[in-house]
Length: 132
Image (cartoon, rainbow, N blue to C red; front, side, top):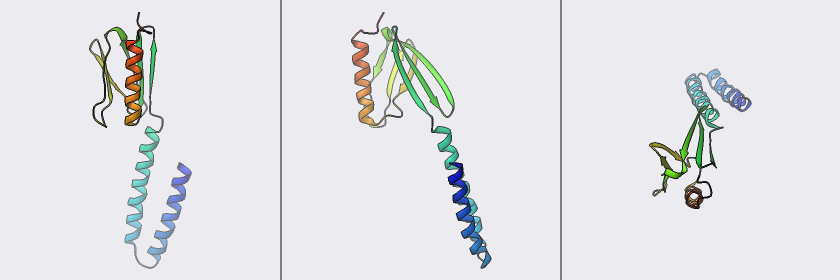
């Protein structure tokens, strides 16, 4: 990514230099603004490129591990008390709650995949496979 940004800067500033040489110095200001905006977008992308959610069902518990922007959180929910709220609108996430602890999952999934995940999770929990 750094190499791509460097090449973009090289190209943009070489074009801007050509305009500055013929007296259009304003182009240099816009080139600096443009490259600053591209740098901000690259930094935002790099910060969130490794975001994920990981869900584990084991020993009567549901473990949800979320990483966003380098911050990791782990939430443990007891399956016996688990309430699962299905997404109703396209942007809704799957809401899980157990004994006052709540977490939303499915941020990185498309709407159809999110609904499928919620149905699969509900079937596994109701099936009693993982209960005590």
